Image (cartoon, rainbow, N blue to C red; front, side, top):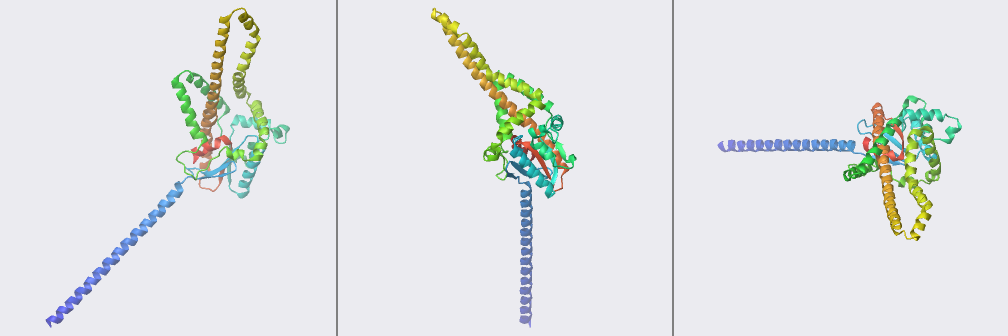
Length: 359
């Protein structure tokens, strides 16, 4: 009887031991599964977050499409060669398609109130001047029925003129000292990086425009002479206060060597006659004058390049891109939560800099 009870006790202990081990195994399996599920869920969340934060843009012809970083609104920047028939056609096609597809949200034009009023007044639809100065801005604006969906995003012409004067004066001062030349170099390097190329932090999924995108478009190049005729003519007719001083400065520097050479030629006979009569010192003075003028003209050439480069990168691109980007961002906030697209018509040189700020 004692032996029988002992065997029963052993059987109970074994059964209890097996039950404990089974429960322990089930518990471990549940914990492991829970950890795997949690890890998988976290991995999916990380993946979704990574995809959401991943920056990308798509290039099509001379346009860039991406989502604005704060509102997640879709943006389409169409880069143009101003007044070029090929660019006008591209703007017309892309804007029309967005309107027909129902994805059109609003239109932002690279213009200000003063310039736009002059454009609409000077180039009324159906007039000869409208045909002569056909442009991408009016081509897009005339497609939109509700004109409240059209906005102007550029810096005012008065502010642009003031900024160009300021930068010109700063450059005049900077070329007088070594520290000033360092400031000029810093501006050229910094603005070249931010306005012409993609931000370094962007990955390979961010596309940008390059010179190749225009050189490989045969129709754009064929129509280039039309742009070269229309663009300066439109500026001269609508904004002479800004264009005339700039052109006067440029052509003044360009023609200065010719004027000095003409003066030397007109007085050259006297110099040679004096030299023939033994005026060796005068000949040496003439040589020194020639060398001095050569150095002066070299400096003027460099100064001309520096001034125009700084004006182009800082005033015409960098500071204007700040204004254009903010205008587009405001329209993105208005379209937030929809699948509508904010279309911006800009000069091609603005696209990379604006995308850098919005992406």
